[in-house]
Length: 268
Image 1 (cartoon, one colour):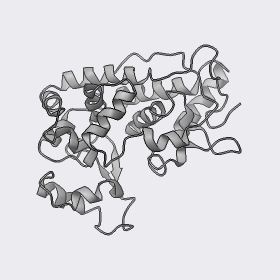
Image 2: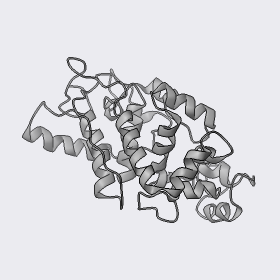
Image 3: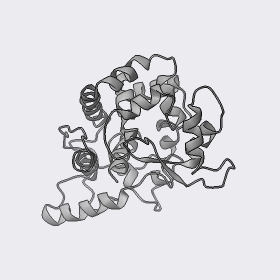
Image 4: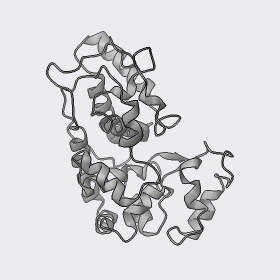
């Protein structure tokens, strides 16, 4: 669940800012972001945030936003669950949206087939530079991916993937579309439960599971950053912490903007 809560924070912030809009359920006035292609049957952790909110509301009603809970849960997941996970100071004071960004989710979230230039452009539009992007991508040192997101890569027989790695990954991911699409595989095989820099070492060995991972080390402008992180876990952890703080500053609702929701999954 640690990886899922970090990812939830990411998917929230990249669609109309860090406003907990991703938590809203479908209703007559809301088209939920939960149904966006990059979220549906993929993003998890909603019920964790809902349960935290219930407990917080029982102690101090109307004070702590769902957006802040998502941000704190991401940090606490890194610290409490992941071995050697980075930590950071979470800025607070966000408020919750009363709208959802389903249409934005289709274009504002990175895709598993995205090329490097597209990823850099997307992150830049959110105020994050290429170094921030590579550092945040390092969260894929934990967590899992569905077969349908990496099938094309492991059956490509191309030069951009280690042949032995591809063979290993095929054991849980059949070639035929629709067969085993939901089968899960660890994004990083060596230490899948440790927040370390093996993700970057894997990229250098052409063992990135997703195409959008491997493009970070494919002869492009981010190769040097990947090499640096592969050699220095301390630098990676420090840069990850800085990048996720910057990400948490994407278009927050503050002051009189937005609301403090009583329940995270629907509007007051």
